[in-house]
Image 1 (tube, rainbow, N blue to C red):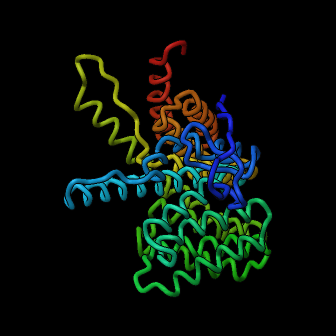
Image 2: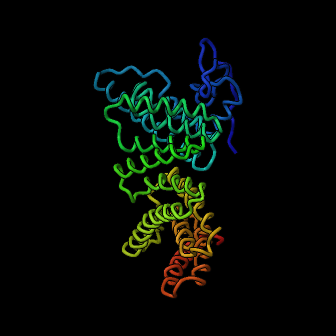
Amino acid sequence: MNVIYPLAVPKGRRLCCEVCEAPAERVCTACTVTYYCGLVHQKADWGSIHEKICQLLIPLRTTMPFYNSEEERQHGLQQLRKRQKHLIELCYTVAQKYLFEGKHEDAVPAALHSLRFRMSVYGLSSVELVPAYLLLAEASLGLGRIVQAEEYLAQAQWTVLKSTDCSSATHSLLHRNLGLLYIAKKNHEEARYHLANDIYFASCAFGSEDIRTSGGYFHLANIFHGLQKMEVADTLYTKVSEIWYTYLNNHCQALLQARSQKADLLGKQFVNDTGLDEAQEAEAIRILTSILSIRESTSGKAPQKTILILKTLSMLYYLMMENSTAKEYARRALSLAEEHLTEEEQMIVQELLAIVSAEVEKQPNA
């Protein structure tokens, strides 16, 4: 359980709340550099991000020490910039993870921190601010605050228009969030336009078969599914499934090969690794479980596609070292495979189940 530090009234100066920028009346006594308008916003910030960055804020929000030389001063500034950039990425990833988990309220304070650190490092009109604006827009959409989401998206669009060096990855993010906005407004034509642009720019940045492009395909599939255009939706869901299957299967094979080639005589365990950050893992779970739900509702029509998703989820949880969950998905995949696939195809699923089961047996109290 998180500890909420007691608050004290700041003395001698007027400061703003970390969450809403209203006049602050209280301070976090753990770091003494973060202020709030009251207990509600202090708790919200703590639960979202402040617990993770409380002590990291102290050197950023206190006066820099006196340096004896210009060389020392420059080194101090470089270290400060590294800390700021680390916090930008940490807050961004945490906010993204909350969004993929559907925790939109929790995402807001973390996204605001990312935005403020970006402003401090890059300035008020830099294109580096756009990802944070988009996080806040998506959180607002999740909370049903469409007007507020439009304001954040307008700020992001204006910043991109003014920029001469905006990357394809940033263009992709912008169009994806505009697509989500128009989905919320039930303007499917505009949503399709922006998601098509999302896929185009993501393909330019990462390739058409990259997991970072798959989100655009997924949201586009959801539109066609909602419009009952099942054939198009099915094609897009299949593409998303195959992208994630290929990515995770490659990681599993690399892990198994490393284990076979580097057997540790001292019994050291290899650490599984998805190659994803926490936000990307949360995105993978959301996308794949959503597709599984759709596949299982029509499993009689295309059981092979359901089996593919089950295998993909099993590999994902295996690489995340959640082996009991991985085993359950592999078991379900095998059960379905025994009804609908050839013996040769069943062997592939059996091998996956055996690998995952072996890991479960290694766990204490398994």
